[in-house]
Image (cartoon, rainbow, N blue to C red; front, side, top):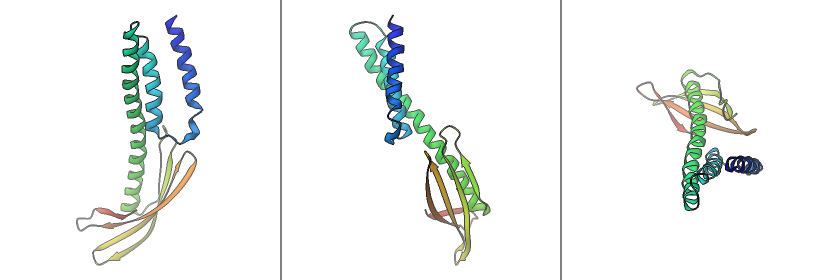
Amino acid sequence: MKVWRFVIVAVMGMALLGGCANLNFSNEDQGMVIGGVLGGLGGSMLGGGRGSIVGAIAGTFAGGYLGREVGRYMDQQDKMLRAEAVEKTIVHGSDEVWENQRTGHYGRVKAGRQYQTRSGYCREYVETVTIDGRPTSAHGTACQERDGSWRIVNQ
């Protein structure tokens, strides 16, 4: 009987949280809320009386922490894919695209003009990142160091 109550409450909670999708919560925040709710519900099924309350509190914190970490990982994956595309564009002067299959976020980095300064070569680049269907554009400049590596000087 307790299991069915848990399942019904969990499904209702997920449906209610689904209605919050347009509130611009980060992946970390969404993961924390969903993990906290599910962890609290799961923890409340442990023991009876005060044990149930302690289980719900512990489950909420543990689920929230784990959910937040999952959300953070997705954001880090986006950043890693973007950084790789920017690096390839800077080093090779190529146009690069990236996409995170998990989040649906994607971007394009295009090489701009290259010019020489007293300290070496510099290259401009333009990028467009699309998150939740909303494109955002930015530009930057990278300059080559004496050892041949490139350093972003402004974004």
